[in-house]
Length: 304
Ligand code: HSE
Image (tube, rainbow, N blue to C red; front, side, top):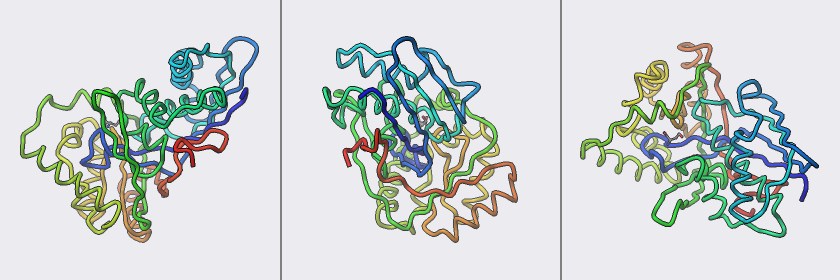
């Protein structure tokens, strides 16, 4: 292949208690095109990040593509990379996870059919630059994913969510740095809080797949959200107000967006109205769960 087009979904990680583990793909996409050219590197960015994302070899999509070529003993070709970015940057919607998933898929597309990468290779390459797999796994494979890491590398299990699930992402105009959010977390937590999150994240898998009426209880967290709250006060205030009205609201990824996991579109509409009253400058995205994940030239990361 000499020209490939990748489509990558936004993702929301953590989903409340599932810190660095649970993630969900959403029906909101970036599209990246890579074309082999005679010489040089050309990167053109449209939409989100057009004035801020790097257009040289430090570009995350390019860096990931090169990593995949190197790992397979192939020379990275000269390319023109065109990015049509919709996923907002620094908002907890998986824009960097989308970039690395996109880099992996573009490289896979250019290497095929001579080299066919496995699902496991896609996840390993994607996780290498991102550090943790909770956004990369759903970006690549779609749906709800449980991701974990052991001495052999990252792994994932994809699950189908309950068909009534109606996700809502509330996006503020300001950004939050994942690095800063991670620096606010303590080295250790009380045993009771660890037990609290074990129970809620186990319950959350059941709530998302079978029993959405349990979502309010299942989205409670004590591992990360409170520690990070001082860095995103509007986010905390909105989550508190939404949860007080019975909406299962959590920080999306490292924030500052809010994810609401409703089991009914009417309740979702009420959550949008409450947000508009409180913070009219926030954007409300009423989305669906993306079940396909990343694709390159129409072929998805999970081969379907
Ligand atoms: N699990 C990650 C975090 C997601 O909350 O820091 C953001 O990359």
